[in-house]
Image (tube, rainbow, N blue to C red; front, side, top):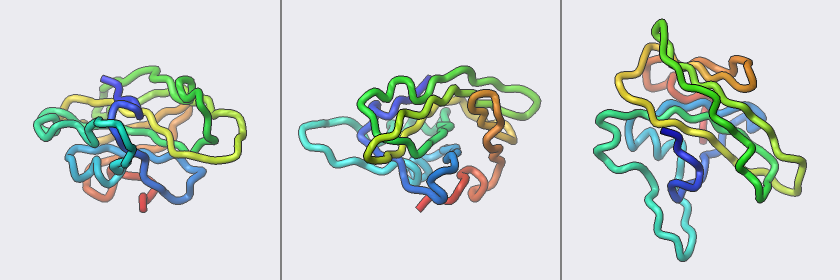
Length: 146
């Protein structure tokens, strides 16, 4: 199930370098909160995260990019596939960066997947491998978010 940036009232964390993709695997609400922060917006009442019982059976795989701001974010990311095989889950997406504008913003594509997770999570963008994440708390996020 794809999770769209507007599904929850959140914004993507900052990471360094911002020109690099942000690859993340979130298996708990605490990990979600490290990557996606609550956004205070008046007159909106969306949840900040999936419900607590969601994390029992699901994880979220997320690919983020720093992109030029645009009113038309529908075409920034397009989910191509999510596949499991040989101990790897692969998230394949098409990325089309918006034209240059006066500001940048963090934008993402995320997918809820069933647990348990395989040993590696591979992120593929426009046919090229971006990053591979593996087990251990420090290895489910790349690069470092702050």
